Length: 292
Image (cartoon, rainbow, N blue to C red; front, side, top):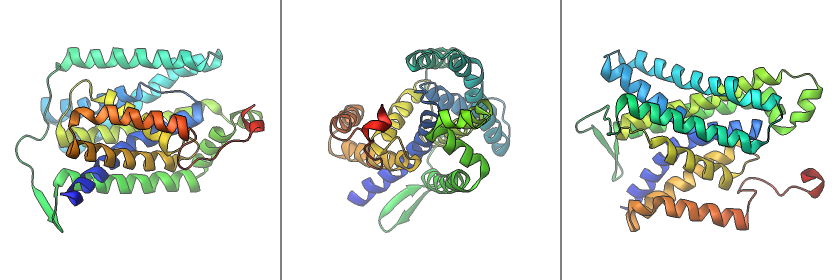
Protein backbone atom coordinates (compact mmCIF):
# COMPACT_ATOMS: atom_id res chain seq x y z
CA UNK A 1 0.00 0.00 0.00
CA UNK A 2 2.86 2.39 0.82
CA UNK A 3 4.40 1.95 -2.65
CA UNK A 4 1.00 2.48 -4.26
CA UNK A 5 0.47 5.72 -2.33
CA UNK A 6 3.94 6.96 -3.32
CA UNK A 7 3.27 6.09 -6.97
CA UNK A 8 -0.08 7.89 -6.90
CA UNK A 9 1.60 10.90 -5.30
CA UNK A 10 4.32 11.06 -7.94
CA UNK A 11 1.78 10.81 -10.76
CA UNK A 12 -0.29 13.59 -9.17
CA UNK A 13 2.95 15.56 -8.96
CA UNK A 14 3.45 15.13 -12.72
CA UNK A 15 0.11 16.84 -13.40
CA UNK A 16 0.67 19.54 -10.77
CA UNK A 17 4.17 20.20 -12.10
CA UNK A 18 2.95 21.13 -15.57
CA UNK A 19 0.53 23.72 -14.17
CA UNK A 20 3.14 24.98 -11.70
CA UNK A 21 5.79 25.33 -14.43
CA UNK A 22 3.47 27.56 -16.42
CA UNK A 23 2.38 29.57 -13.39
CA UNK A 24 5.96 29.98 -12.18
CA UNK A 25 7.19 30.96 -15.64
CA UNK A 26 4.58 33.72 -15.89
CA UNK A 27 5.12 34.96 -12.34
CA UNK A 28 8.92 34.94 -12.51
CA UNK A 29 8.91 36.84 -15.81
CA UNK A 30 6.10 39.35 -15.23
CA UNK A 31 5.57 39.31 -11.42
CA UNK A 32 1.85 38.78 -12.05
CA UNK A 33 -0.06 36.34 -9.85
CA UNK A 34 -1.88 34.90 -12.83
CA UNK A 35 -4.98 33.52 -11.10
CA UNK A 36 -6.68 33.22 -14.52
CA UNK A 37 -4.20 30.37 -15.14
CA UNK A 38 -6.87 28.18 -13.55
CA UNK A 39 -9.42 29.36 -16.11
CA UNK A 40 -7.04 28.44 -18.96
CA UNK A 41 -6.64 24.98 -17.41
CA UNK A 42 -10.44 24.59 -17.16
CA UNK A 43 -11.21 26.03 -20.61
CA UNK A 44 -8.77 23.65 -22.33
CA UNK A 45 -10.35 20.66 -20.57
CA UNK A 46 -13.86 21.73 -21.62
CA UNK A 47 -12.68 22.42 -25.16
CA UNK A 48 -11.50 18.81 -25.32
CA UNK A 49 -14.89 17.63 -24.04
CA UNK A 50 -16.71 19.77 -26.62
CA UNK A 51 -14.68 18.64 -29.62
CA UNK A 52 -14.30 14.99 -28.61
CA UNK A 53 -17.70 14.23 -27.05
CA UNK A 54 -20.16 16.90 -28.16
CA UNK A 55 -19.28 17.01 -31.85
CA UNK A 56 -17.29 13.75 -32.13
CA UNK A 57 -14.06 15.02 -33.66
CA UNK A 58 -11.14 12.54 -33.81
CA UNK A 59 -9.02 12.35 -30.65
CA UNK A 60 -5.88 13.90 -32.13
CA UNK A 61 -7.72 16.83 -33.70
CA UNK A 62 -9.68 17.42 -30.47
CA UNK A 63 -6.49 17.51 -28.42
CA UNK A 64 -4.75 19.92 -30.82
CA UNK A 65 -7.75 22.26 -30.95
CA UNK A 66 -8.12 22.23 -27.16
CA UNK A 67 -4.43 23.08 -26.70
CA UNK A 68 -4.71 25.91 -29.23
CA UNK A 69 -7.76 27.36 -27.45
CA UNK A 70 -6.06 27.23 -24.05
CA UNK A 71 -2.90 28.84 -25.40
CA UNK A 72 -4.78 31.59 -27.23
CA UNK A 73 -6.83 32.30 -24.12
CA UNK A 74 -3.66 32.92 -22.11
CA UNK A 75 -2.20 35.12 -24.85
CA UNK A 76 -5.47 37.09 -25.06
CA UNK A 77 -5.38 37.72 -21.32
CA UNK A 78 -1.92 39.23 -21.67
CA UNK A 79 -2.84 41.24 -24.78
CA UNK A 80 -6.09 42.77 -23.58
CA UNK A 81 -5.61 42.89 -19.82
CA UNK A 82 -2.12 42.61 -18.38
CA UNK A 83 -0.06 44.46 -20.97
CA UNK A 84 -2.29 47.57 -20.98
CA UNK A 85 -1.99 47.61 -17.18
CA UNK A 86 1.78 47.14 -17.50
CA UNK A 87 2.06 50.13 -19.86
CA UNK A 88 0.12 52.26 -17.39
CA UNK A 89 2.48 51.05 -14.61
CA UNK A 90 -0.46 49.79 -12.58
CA UNK A 91 0.40 48.13 -9.24
CA UNK A 92 0.71 44.35 -9.29
CA UNK A 93 -2.27 44.14 -6.93
CA UNK A 94 -4.46 45.58 -9.70
CA UNK A 95 -3.30 42.87 -12.10
CA UNK A 96 -4.06 40.21 -9.49
CA UNK A 97 -7.59 41.54 -8.90
CA UNK A 98 -8.18 41.76 -12.66
CA UNK A 99 -6.92 38.19 -13.00
CA UNK A 100 -9.39 36.98 -10.38
CA UNK A 101 -12.15 38.78 -12.27
CA UNK A 102 -11.21 37.06 -15.53
CA UNK A 103 -11.12 33.70 -13.74
CA UNK A 104 -14.58 34.16 -12.24
CA UNK A 105 -16.05 35.39 -15.52
CA UNK A 106 -14.67 32.48 -17.56
CA UNK A 107 -15.60 29.82 -15.00
CA UNK A 108 -19.17 31.10 -14.77
CA UNK A 109 -19.37 31.26 -18.56
CA UNK A 110 -18.24 27.62 -18.77
CA UNK A 111 -20.80 26.63 -16.13
CA UNK A 112 -23.53 28.44 -18.08
CA UNK A 113 -22.61 26.70 -21.33
CA UNK A 114 -21.91 23.19 -20.05
CA UNK A 115 -23.61 23.01 -16.65
CA UNK A 116 -22.13 22.39 -13.19
CA UNK A 117 -22.28 18.61 -13.22
CA UNK A 118 -19.16 16.48 -13.63
CA UNK A 119 -18.35 15.53 -17.23
CA UNK A 120 -16.66 12.19 -17.89
CA UNK A 121 -14.67 11.86 -21.10
CA UNK A 122 -13.63 8.23 -20.67
CA UNK A 123 -16.55 6.34 -19.10
CA UNK A 124 -16.24 2.79 -17.86
CA UNK A 125 -13.35 0.86 -16.38
CA UNK A 126 -9.90 1.70 -17.67
CA UNK A 127 -7.21 -0.81 -18.49
CA UNK A 128 -4.66 -1.24 -15.70
CA UNK A 129 -1.07 -2.46 -15.53
CA UNK A 130 0.86 -3.89 -12.60
CA UNK A 131 4.52 -3.13 -11.87
CA UNK A 132 6.14 -4.67 -8.76
CA UNK A 133 2.84 -4.62 -6.90
CA UNK A 134 1.92 -1.10 -8.04
CA UNK A 135 -1.27 -0.80 -10.11
CA UNK A 136 -1.41 2.02 -12.64
CA UNK A 137 -4.09 2.92 -15.14
CA UNK A 138 -3.32 3.60 -18.79
CA UNK A 139 -4.03 7.31 -18.29
CA UNK A 140 -1.66 7.49 -15.31
CA UNK A 141 1.11 6.01 -17.44
CA UNK A 142 0.34 8.52 -20.20
CA UNK A 143 0.45 11.37 -17.63
CA UNK A 144 3.91 10.28 -16.52
CA UNK A 145 5.26 9.96 -20.06
CA UNK A 146 3.77 13.31 -21.12
CA UNK A 147 5.29 15.07 -18.12
CA UNK A 148 8.77 13.64 -18.75
CA UNK A 149 8.68 14.58 -22.45
CA UNK A 150 7.23 18.06 -21.88
CA UNK A 151 9.60 18.87 -19.03
CA UNK A 152 12.66 17.79 -21.03
CA UNK A 153 11.54 19.89 -24.02
CA UNK A 154 10.82 22.86 -21.72
CA UNK A 155 14.20 22.52 -19.99
CA UNK A 156 16.14 22.33 -23.26
CA UNK A 157 14.14 25.25 -24.70
CA UNK A 158 14.84 27.44 -21.68
CA UNK A 159 18.53 26.56 -21.41
CA UNK A 160 19.64 26.19 -25.02
CA UNK A 161 17.39 28.23 -27.34
CA UNK A 162 17.68 31.93 -28.07
CA UNK A 163 14.05 32.52 -27.10
CA UNK A 164 14.62 30.71 -23.82
CA UNK A 165 17.59 32.96 -23.07
CA UNK A 166 15.43 36.02 -23.79
CA UNK A 167 12.83 34.81 -21.32
CA UNK A 168 15.48 34.17 -18.66
CA UNK A 169 17.00 37.59 -19.26
CA UNK A 170 13.63 39.29 -18.82
CA UNK A 171 12.85 37.29 -15.69
CA UNK A 172 16.25 37.91 -14.09
CA UNK A 173 16.55 41.62 -14.79
CA UNK A 174 13.58 43.30 -16.53
CA UNK A 175 15.07 46.80 -16.21
CA UNK A 176 18.31 45.78 -17.92
CA UNK A 177 16.38 43.91 -20.62
CA UNK A 178 14.44 47.09 -21.37
CA UNK A 179 17.61 49.19 -21.52
CA UNK A 180 19.21 46.71 -23.92
CA UNK A 181 16.30 47.10 -26.31
CA UNK A 182 14.64 43.71 -25.85
CA UNK A 183 11.13 43.47 -27.32
CA UNK A 184 9.33 43.14 -23.99
CA UNK A 185 5.87 42.79 -25.48
CA UNK A 186 6.74 39.87 -27.77
CA UNK A 187 8.66 38.14 -24.99
CA UNK A 188 5.72 38.48 -22.61
CA UNK A 189 3.37 37.05 -25.26
CA UNK A 190 5.73 34.10 -25.65
CA UNK A 191 5.77 33.58 -21.88
CA UNK A 192 1.98 33.62 -21.58
CA UNK A 193 1.62 31.36 -24.60
CA UNK A 194 4.10 28.82 -23.26
CA UNK A 195 2.71 28.97 -19.71
CA UNK A 196 -0.86 28.57 -20.97
CA UNK A 197 0.15 25.63 -23.15
CA UNK A 198 1.58 23.86 -20.09
CA UNK A 199 -1.64 24.49 -18.13
CA UNK A 200 -3.71 23.27 -21.08
CA UNK A 201 -1.76 20.02 -21.33
CA UNK A 202 -2.35 19.38 -17.64
CA UNK A 203 -6.05 20.20 -17.96
CA UNK A 204 -6.43 17.69 -20.78
CA UNK A 205 -4.68 14.96 -18.78
CA UNK A 206 -6.96 15.53 -15.79
CA UNK A 207 -10.04 15.58 -18.03
CA UNK A 208 -9.08 12.19 -19.49
CA UNK A 209 -8.25 10.76 -16.05
CA UNK A 210 -10.97 11.80 -13.59
CA UNK A 211 -13.35 14.06 -15.51
CA UNK A 212 -14.08 17.76 -15.19
CA UNK A 213 -16.34 20.33 -13.59
CA UNK A 214 -16.20 24.15 -13.83
CA UNK A 215 -14.34 24.50 -10.53
CA UNK A 216 -11.35 22.24 -11.22
CA UNK A 217 -9.18 25.23 -12.03
CA UNK A 218 -9.34 26.71 -8.53
CA UNK A 219 -7.70 23.78 -6.77
CA UNK A 220 -5.19 23.46 -9.62
CA UNK A 221 -4.03 27.08 -9.47
CA UNK A 222 -3.98 26.99 -5.64
CA UNK A 223 -1.77 23.90 -5.56
CA UNK A 224 0.55 25.19 -8.29
CA UNK A 225 0.97 28.56 -6.55
CA UNK A 226 1.94 26.77 -3.33
CA UNK A 227 4.28 24.48 -5.31
CA UNK A 228 6.07 27.48 -6.82
CA UNK A 229 6.47 29.12 -3.41
CA UNK A 230 7.78 26.09 -1.55
CA UNK A 231 9.98 24.94 -4.44
CA UNK A 232 11.52 28.35 -5.01
CA UNK A 233 10.31 31.28 -7.07
CA UNK A 234 13.77 32.14 -8.41
CA UNK A 235 14.31 28.86 -10.26
CA UNK A 236 11.95 27.12 -12.69
CA UNK A 237 12.86 23.64 -11.48
CA UNK A 238 11.65 24.62 -8.01
CA UNK A 239 8.04 24.49 -9.22
CA UNK A 240 8.53 20.85 -10.24
CA UNK A 241 10.05 19.90 -6.88
CA UNK A 242 7.25 21.67 -5.01
CA UNK A 243 4.61 19.96 -7.16
CA UNK A 244 6.00 16.49 -6.45
CA UNK A 245 6.22 17.19 -2.72
CA UNK A 246 2.61 18.35 -2.65
CA UNK A 247 1.49 15.36 -4.71
CA UNK A 248 3.12 12.98 -2.24
CA UNK A 249 1.86 14.81 0.85
CA UNK A 250 -1.70 15.05 -0.45
CA UNK A 251 -1.86 11.34 -1.27
CA UNK A 252 -0.44 10.42 2.13
CA UNK A 253 -3.09 12.70 3.66
CA UNK A 254 -5.84 10.88 1.76
CA UNK A 255 -4.42 7.53 2.88
CA UNK A 256 -4.01 8.40 6.56
CA UNK A 257 -6.80 10.95 7.08
CA UNK A 258 -9.31 11.93 4.41
CA UNK A 259 -9.52 13.76 1.08
CA UNK A 260 -11.24 16.59 2.95
CA UNK A 261 -7.92 17.43 4.63
CA UNK A 262 -5.99 17.95 1.38
CA UNK A 263 -6.46 21.70 1.04
CA UNK A 264 -5.98 22.30 4.78
CA UNK A 265 -2.68 20.43 4.77
CA UNK A 266 -1.57 22.25 1.61
CA UNK A 267 -2.37 25.61 3.18
CA UNK A 268 -0.55 24.59 6.36
CA UNK A 269 2.58 23.73 4.36
CA UNK A 270 2.38 27.12 2.66
CA UNK A 271 2.23 28.91 6.02
CA UNK A 272 5.21 26.94 7.34
CA UNK A 273 7.36 27.83 4.33
CA UNK A 274 6.34 31.49 4.43
CA UNK A 275 7.39 31.62 8.09
CA UNK A 276 10.51 29.42 8.01
CA UNK A 277 11.86 29.52 4.45
CA UNK A 278 10.03 32.08 2.29
CA UNK A 279 12.63 31.84 -0.50
CA UNK A 280 11.73 28.17 -1.07
CA UNK A 281 13.78 24.99 -1.13
CA UNK A 282 15.89 25.66 -4.24
CA UNK A 283 16.22 29.43 -3.93
CA UNK A 284 18.73 31.47 -2.05
CA UNK A 285 18.41 34.28 0.44
CA UNK A 286 18.82 37.60 -1.29
CA UNK A 287 21.25 40.18 -0.04
CA UNK A 288 19.86 43.46 1.26
CA UNK A 289 21.26 45.41 -1.69
CA UNK A 290 19.36 43.11 -4.08
CA UNK A 291 16.06 43.71 -2.30
CA UNK A 292 16.41 47.48 -1.92
